[in-house]
Image (tube, rainbow, N blue to C red; front, side, top):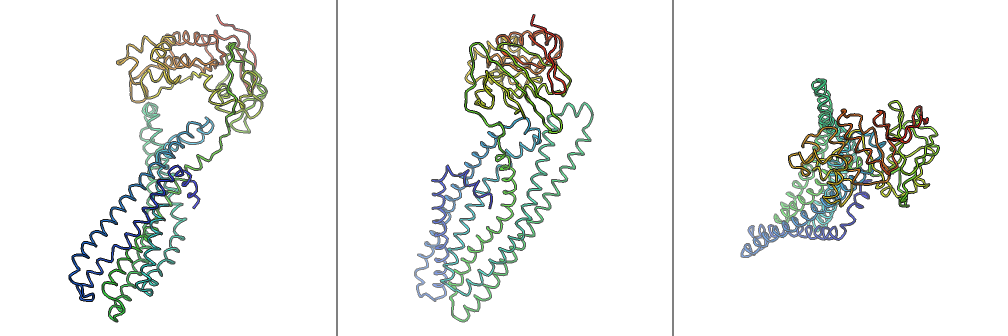
Length: 557
């Protein structure tokens, strides 16, 4: 029952609607108690036991009304509970996506993208299942069992005892099979997430796979994963079939015992045929919720396994908690300082060791060094994508950890080595740099990034969709759109991660012209190797072995 408290928290905002649903549960149960009696009265009238054959029409209408009332109340209850379940699903998906957007690069590296996708899209359904089936089906079934037991005991206590004799074996079966079903469901969920990961990686790396003719190899690997998922699901469903067969056998034995004993009671005159019929109707309504409760074992085992995968993600502590002080933006520019900074992805292999570096307001500092030396890692410390293991990074003299993270990141522009485009229009991609930007501001940023000319030549100009499955742009064109975002954001600190490394000579000239304008008046830290990029820097430092070494002065031309 570890899932109960987290699920109730998710549905707390819907407390009034939940109360209404509980009211409908009570009314539906009351209607179910009334429902069998008109049929009993009709049967007794026909057999002459009641002496009121003229009332058959009235009882028939009562029977119709009882069934209609029960059906309408049940439909209203089901509709409200489903609506509540979907509200909670929307809420948990919001929490999951919000947590996803707060993940640090370090956290992302530990899990395949397909697994994140599976948790956010499919595992979240578990909370709707736990609410609608685990809580409300449990409450409805529980209320039905209590109501039917009370009414049945008033009709014939020995028959009621026989009916309830099935409960202990049912509980035993649920206790024995419950943990097995949950383990099988967890294994199956993990295997299915592996399929999602394989598909995501196949789509993301399609060109690479085709270039090296690895289609057969990847297909074989996918078949192995699909086979594992097949075996996991088959094992899960076989366990469920055995479990449900055991439940059906117990309920069948109970029904057979009641029919045998009830027949003798009618023959002995201690029970009318109508009363036996009513008792059997109540027995069906008793066994239906018991059957529902027993079926919940398999359903809840699967849902609990999925919910646990979501909760372990949501409950992961945020190691880079935000400060409260707004990041200052002095008119003279931002001063950045690294003091004794150390960092390691693996404690046995430090990436940065006792690093010291200061950037004056408006200064451009280039970082060079061998691949894997930690240059990009150093950049990621500034917007707090990563946290230093030792030392401090200071912003205008303030420790970054004391600053409000959102305020800090709004004042940092990052231009990546590989430009990323959203699946949206060109204008929306540039406008992503700042909320509420006007079309004129977007076009001005494109002009500054030397992107306007090629944008207006696109089929729909600024309204052309780019990104996945849309218009194809060259790497240089993508990079200029990325630079336009940075111009629009107009942040005082600029981080450049080898912005021209993948460009040809002509594209590099256009991008570097835009970069040179972008760096003016901004404190800039850039990873670079090419002379064309290094010449705009005031200083060049080499990062090697986790330590910075100052190189001869360059100075921008």
